[in-house]
Image (cartoon, rainbow, N blue to C red; front, side, top):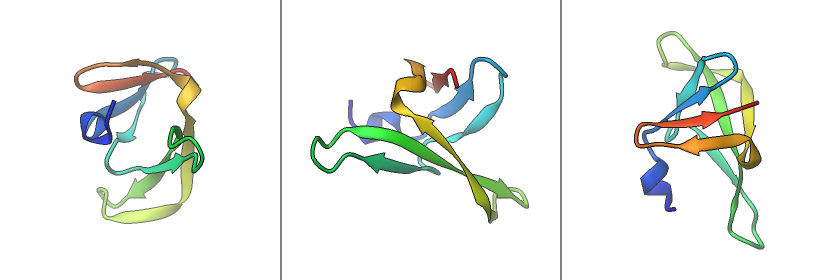
Length: 76
């Protein structure tokens, strides 16, 4: 799967039902040796998405349960 196929999908936590962000507004942690994605780094936005806060959430690739057409479902 390519990054462009993932971009724009909402990230939703299945346990809490909360929306964590949209892929494309996140950073990726990639293993330099294998080229595989290890985690997503989701920034915490405030002021209607205009101001980036210092805190972030890290979502491990292993926590992803399902990648759908519109969403990425995680269990963290």
